[in-house]
Image 1 (cartoon, helix red, strand yellow):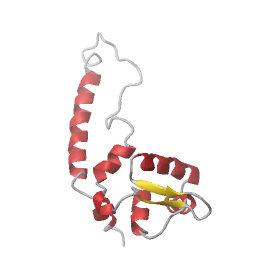
Image 2: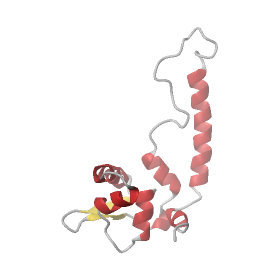
Image 3: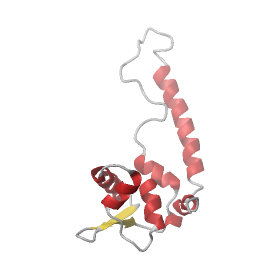
Image 4: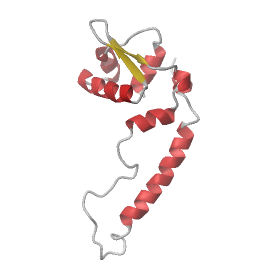
Amino acid sequence: MHILTLLEKSPNEVLSSDYLAGSININPVLVRKEIINLRKHGLVASKEGKSGGSYLARPAKEILLSDVYEAVRQNSILGQNKNKPNPKCIVGKQIDEHLNNLSNEVEDAMIKKLSKTTLADFSKKFN
């Protein structure tokens, strides 16, 4: 969101990964990795070369926050066990199924909420 909001705030500029990293206070390599991901999902475009950098691939009013979430989500909201629980335990044998169901319900509600807000709407919160 930080990267996309910065890009939205600079619609006529191409922002370098160094500039973006300076705002986020992280290594530019991490920014470049995320830019690749955002580009893969059609949210960001990039210009290579000395004066290169990134910009939004489409207008911010056309980018839903649910699109952003889908691009960056990594794991289940409630997590998953790294090991298999004891199948003889009343909780262990059912925990993954119930956590997955709950996680899906929560995620569906969150995506529904995010789909009602655009990047342009979110960006308006920053002066």
